[in-house]
Length: 613
Image 1: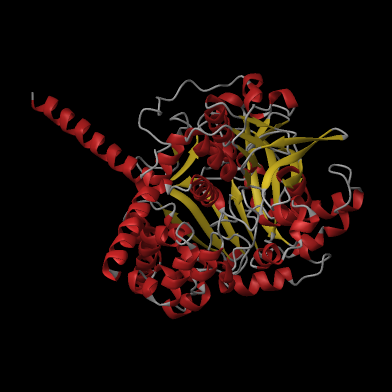
Image 2: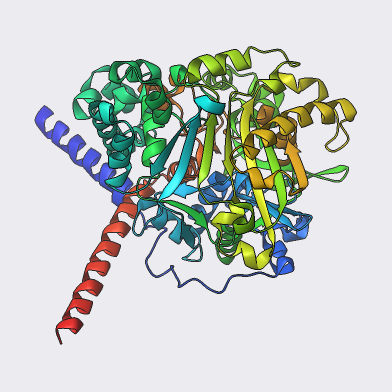
């Protein structure tokens, strides 16, 4: 009798598991992908898509989901839900959709705000398949030069320069050529990179299976028997590097893609993934970063949804039973309620829980517990430079430059963030330079004779906090003078790399953490959202940091779900859509990848056959 009951339960469990994994229709298909259409250069037509202002009459009827924030995480979740048959409304507080994927044009110069380059979009890669699905084949990428990054360490006569190449084998081989005595250390690091890249989906799976199952697998040690990726995720980058090599320059190269956290506080796995991300090439969207939002929004619209800007959400509506059922949107002096059975927040965990939830909900212990699991990220500081001249005239290149004043990143970052507000602008330890106009081949058509450069570094929000209650572009002379001290020092440092730009600067715009808060809605100006510290990537913390929240029908998307960057936020959107649909859409994507691979093989076979005849 007991045996029969156990067998019945096993059959029910197996049937339920099969239904969860395969029983629901896929939102994706080969047929939805069309050949790319002609690029839309008419700014007025583009604005109708990415700058459509909020009004009640533009809100679709009978909504299935509301997405707060139009960054790549929100748009990915929205487009995936739309393709699954849901009517979706995306609400954006800024006057242009896209979040960190938006661009802005000023004085004839077009600047990318957050997307500087992207990897893993080669043919039939998972990321490329996702982009093809959510844009229905309309987004195109330009592959950048094989030499995609340069790292400079030190100043003046002490300066050393290293180059990073893409390529399945070339990346490692080229690094060994530059550090011939460190071959063993490099080989070991690249093995870590391979494991991290191939098995990261195990970590993502922790967020999709029942939490008690995830924690059981981790606490019992079963997960570690399956893969070392769970241990690598919680391994301190500096501690591991110290076991590999004493060469401080090489240690910088293993962690050079900085995101506000020093190596001693960061995850080895995340640092390895960031470098591996460009192994198969670095790319840039043809037409600029705003092409991403432009085409994803059109996918949402084709399925009955919409994306509206100038739509600041003031509150998430929660009913007496503790379930979200819509949002309040500020429209002038009034607030408009928009209702939907699902609310997805892509504006960060801190904004969501601390600002948008009603006071009585945010005070609940389970909400506070979720908040306490995260820390605020570092603020970003950007300098947008408009230059008179072409890339050829100014000696500009598509290669990015990462500059470090010395080779001890832990020490230099610790000392920098400990500085007083007064001393900080004159002691910047690192920065990043990108030239978007040299990456996009169509930039010459849109803005002939002009070049643009973006410079980025990380700063403390507290240095700018005294001006937090002032209005954008009206913060006063003291604020302007203070942020320009940073800007002048950063630009002077950039001139040591590109000396011809010194006298060609005709426009400059400077974004402090307060600017990022205003335009991007980034808490404390942190463009990478919550801090990516080591504690966040302990396997148990990964398992607990889910898209679902203590508030029923409210979900989190974007960088706070898994990791930072365009790819990290996009996966946050996919994980969120999986949670909302109660269906692991990654299985659909892997099956689609297999179909594409078989189709490619058939096409190749047919071409080979024709050659024979």
